Amino acid sequence: MPSLLRPGTFALTALLAALSAVGPLTTDMYLPSLPDIVHLLGATTADGQLTISAYLIGFAAGQIIYGPLSDRHGRKPVLIGAIALYCAASLLCTSSLSIEMLIGARALQALGGCGGIVLARAIVRDLYAGARAGRELSLISAVMALAPVIAPIAGGALQTALGWRSVFATLAVVGLAGIGVIWLLLPETLAKRASEPVSPASILTSYRIVARDSAYLAYLGLATTSYAGLFAWISGASFVLQNLYGLTPFVFGFAFAVGSIGYMTGTTVAARIVLRLGLDGTIGVGCVALSVGGLAMAAAVASGVDSTFTLVVPMAVYLAGLGMVLPQSIAGALTPFPERAGAASALLGFIQQIVAAASGVAVGQLLGRSAWPLAIAVAVMGCASLVLWSATRAQRARAAGKH
Figure (cartoon, rainbow, N blue to C red):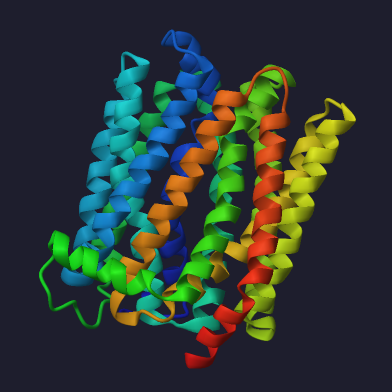
């Protein structure tokens, strides 16, 4: 491996972070445009939410294939193919003439975009394990956290200056640049390729092996519940903050970015403490922050104070907790499966995204003249994460003793 991209270097971490950021970049960058898209394409608020949910469903479905495919054929060629599909679909989004066409194009965009995060996680497991993998995933997440800070601001600026189609055109250009970087700089990290050819039977076998591990299921639950709260926020924030609280698209971008700084803070703290507290201790601290942030948001809505900060600040606390929980949960889930890291990453991502999509659809369908659906979803997911962390400590401790 070239010295520039050897394990432990910031260059490799930054590249993996950029790959992981495809998902949040693609979602957050067009959020300021969502009300305008709904208006110009003659759609409803629920139709607009489907452009988010379709992306999440496509993002989930694609991961099922990419993981085992990369275990067999290597990370790099599969990654290049995935991002090429993403670029083509982004151009299709740009040319959409109806909300139905945009929904379909978003699903196709997700089928390509999901390759980045699945394969970035698999590459981390190729190179690291245990708390060291957790630290690397935290560092990646800290760098990746710039995406939801910068993306809505950039999206708001593009929306104001050039309209919503310019957002998707920009994403296509970013994807093409990514292909060039991967082609030139990213080495193949898979040391031993899976022996069996990729087929429906071999894919199901890989997933059965992974899903029989009780500790894996515990970490999967933690990653899924905490992540669902994030997508309740993503699904509802643009409509609540713009339609109910009166923010402009550009100001919304800044408000959304302030909340996202919480995630960056959480991942930075996790990278500093995980080698001392371990995966479980770091996850526990994060789960407390998740529940506190969710309950604070519910309390703010109950108080009846219609202030942007009463939603953004509690969400920043929630996202700080997510920054501690998510990378460590992923590291814990992948550690037992060095030979099936792609499959383990893909199954986790699939279930995580399906639940997140359901959370987003529920919030989108229930949103009206109140922020209650959003606040309830965030509070429930935060508290559920804390309960799950407490209830599954024994299973995760046994697994830690084996590795």
